Image (cartoon, rainbow, N blue to C red; front, side, top):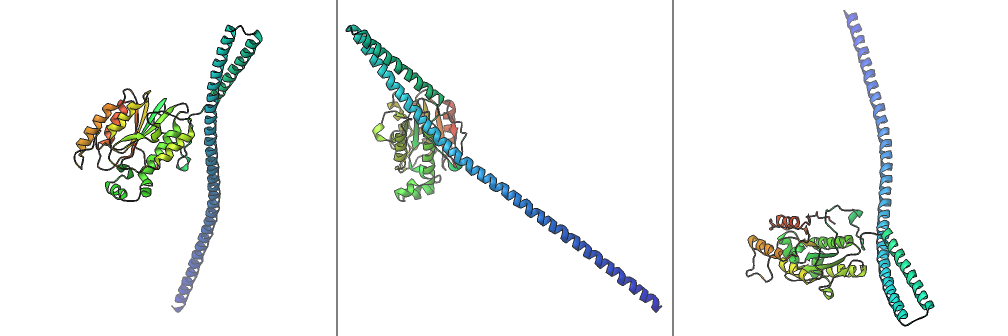
Length: 362
């Protein structure tokens, strides 16, 4: 009986040894597999990181090249404008020479003098043709470049054509912020703080973006309005400005950045200001944040209801020139729920466009 127990104990001990060896083998295999996976993961991560770094470098090179191309396009556009100006001057000289030829013929001048003048006229005509061909071959779209954050391009649907283009910029106090409480706070701060307000800065960048997209051969004007309306450059009131005049474009932008949004909003006065231009505008861009708070005169009370704002707006649009597209860029503020629908209807009925951009546009 004791012998059987010893055999059974020996059998149990051998079984436990086998089980221990088997478990150890499993652990060893697991460690080997785990190490292999870790090594493969490191190699894969290293390869992916290298590819990411290469892609980032390609993106940086592409962005730098894009900026250089845009600067080159701006230079080409300015060269086109200069060539067109030279062509105009040469055409004027041709007219003068032809008048001189006619006068010489009337005075019985020598044939050699007439032939000499004819040769000069022919040379000038060839110069005009060359300049015009050069302008057509290298024609661009705008006289100014605008690069947004990240060098992005934007598909907006805005109609940027026309020969006489007006940009109406709302400079009322509501352009400081979206919320009424923030507008009140900013109004009580220093002027330089108000000029740096996020909403106002977006409006200024929008004007810069628009002027950068205008056709080189077009004319434009920027009109600011709150309770009153006037041109961004007061000395240019009632005059059309040339898009090709880049220093003047920069002067307009600088003048706007000196403005501090203040006062109420009279959209009617802004539309009435369009009547001072001859020829009339053929494309209008309206940058605003809501319905007007008054008509041509100050309101009677200290508050304006939603119905009153709607009445002021509908009176204002009666002053718009007929058959002119109105493109609305709306930065909505709280407490004015009817603004989006009313301005959208205005854009649709005038064959313009309506845009309510995100905060990072343009």
